[in-house]
Image (cartoon, rainbow, N blue to C red; front, side, top):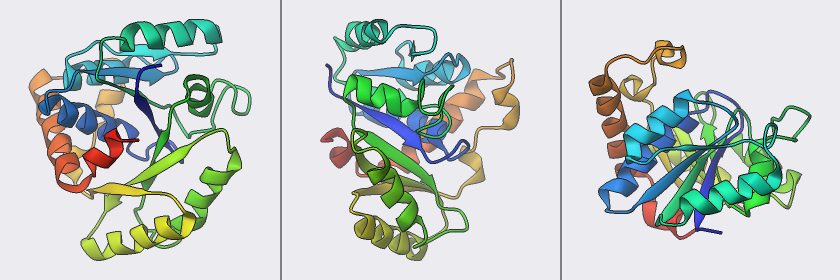
Length: 221
């Protein structure tokens, strides 16, 4: 299977899509050919992936497809890429029946390390047991690193790094609390507004990723 990672989260609305868009654009800026994927049948996030990377995003869904088909799709579309980035759906273990159909199932099926996005708003060292729980809940799911979202300051981030160390998971960086890189709620509906607006948001997210995320460490996963 092609080298890749899966972007998961503890819950929905943790910042997976914002981080994924920023990561896709940041890697593309480095001259890498990145192939995006999306867990589940979602078709809006795949549009964002295409804008951010220039490559068509592909759905990986074990509810409507066989596991063999999902593996074939990943291998086929990721074959020419330097790296594959799979964005999860909802919380990491949320599926149609417990964890069946979840992002965790896709990670195990494709043997992908998981980068967990954690919303750190109104939390600091208390994220340690949350990260520890995700790491140990299912040993077959490899939680390889954490990226924090909604970080308010360097001081705030220092507590979050300590939490990662206590939980035994690599801390890969963070996204600052910034209303300018939040996807407006209307973009989650059936219509997508001006391309220029999304381009601006993607570039801001990529700038943030380049400033505060260990891209080399993330690629080396």
